[in-house]
Length: 257
Image 1 (cartoon, rainbow, N blue to C red):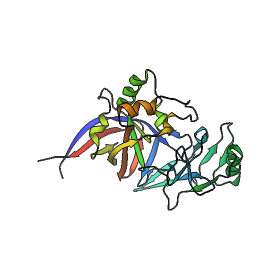
Image 2: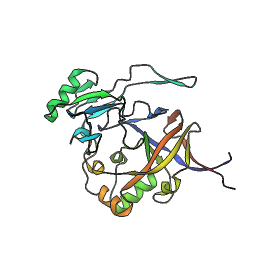
Image 3: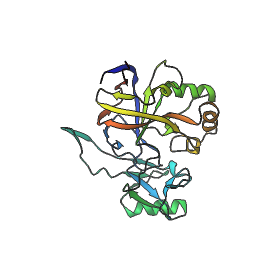
Image 4: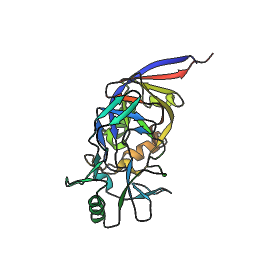
């Protein structure tokens, strides 16, 4: 099938969140698997009723205010062998408390530290049959839309507030340029291919404090009044590969007759 391809920018930043709803980890490169960035949201904090700790309440999620002030990292080294990505260590995340204490998530001490800090029974579990991601395994934002939101807010807006996996530097492209990308594909670095879905709906989490990012009061209200409370796009993986900061990003559409 013939395609029309248009360069739209380059990868400016990559983030993964080894433990869901904790502050994320910026990386220079990551393997992209069929379920998103390697190690992203593979673990989560669970509440006493079996819900997944989050900043909101849904059928799957339970609010645990303050959890985003904890952080999680994976100290790994991705290795490419043929078409498979290998990890030269266990890939078990480390959980970091606001005071800087470090715990392996599979150590009972991590759950005990969380339970003590929040005054309720909390446990840590790897993803099994119930997904940890919200709408889709990946989501992205663009610098054009961040700049537009900064104009509405009258000041800088930290991209970490939106907890996206991929930030794309779209240069001088117009605000919310990604709205026109829905249904198309993105080719990143000539290797990874993503199918783009609808806009990413936003909730109270974008105004909450997280490690390194203070609480805000404007972003959700501004997006609600100007952009249907959406920011960035949902995405699914079509082709896996290695993704790096600085990789070119190309928009690909089916060519119409």
